[in-house]
Image (cartoon, rainbow over all chains, first blue to last red; front, side):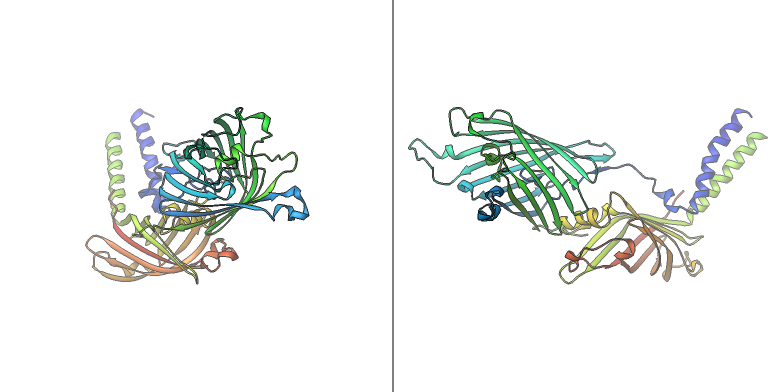
Length: 297
Length: 186
């Protein structure tokens, strides 16, 4: 076989093959599958793992009304109905400004504390063309205690009520069923309890979810605080719960040793210990409203 | 002589391919809408990136619909549609492969509106079902305008609606197809 004949065979065979295929698959001819970048969404059912911000952002124009409840300690027994007689609450509103920017405010009954945050997704996980292996989200926030001082002091000014936090969420939706994120966090308080307490705290957090079904998942949320005052009997916050999504609502039912529902409280005032059974029931309810609807063409 | 044979066969092949291609019409921006009417909520979605091909000679017609291409008024609906109902990550496209039941009824060189019936198999959410859809095909100046409306039962395609949202999502959805087909050039 000479070269020309060989070339003719090589070039013509695929052409013939395509032609033969056309009668059964018309689409093949006009839409060769072009790889496109596809962003990964729905890493979580809600914008919080349990205590922490999750990788999930609100979509543009979505207002999320969040009702958070923590009951009292389970080990108080039947006299306190396993803690259910006692409850603290945080009400908050989050809003999706754009695909990558969410802002939120809230108020917790514990020390009547206001809090607010800005959450920006710097990098979104993607597949296909130009894949991105993980998402990177930056969170910055502030807290203000508004309850009267328990030990009033003329030197206390408004600034002493304020705390700040900054957080990096780096995580990946490994599969439809599994998402894991790490959360290095820095927290600064203008006023601390004792001289041995640091104003600036560093914490390493890890959180994630494993889906049980299309609408339910098991979530875990934990922080290791690196430089807290070891003399005050503080513990690392750990929450374990179940997410249930029912259309417009997401219910996050969980057990936790953290009484707090903002970053300052759960990082600096978690005095309960899982080891001693000082845990409590809690739930978060998220109700999403589409404030700005997308126009359908 | 060998060269002549080669070039001749190549020429014939290209001619054949081009000739065949001229009898095909296609679009990559076809529109498929769906509408679900339930007591508490109406749900509407639009997909503007539907690929469709019609082969005039055989009457064969095929569609491909990217499930993630459906846009909803409410972001949460879109999220639930993809994650809970059609499971777009597992089943990214819906594909219809069928044919006009009476391909002779259409004169592609004569302007006018023709009533047609398309019969074939729709694969959606991993389930393939036979479908017979009436519609119209309008022959215009070098273009074809295809329209059809039909109803689908979600339960036929293994898409379950939980009791909790029965009043918000209907099992019967109305599908509207709107195609502006142009000749496929080889």
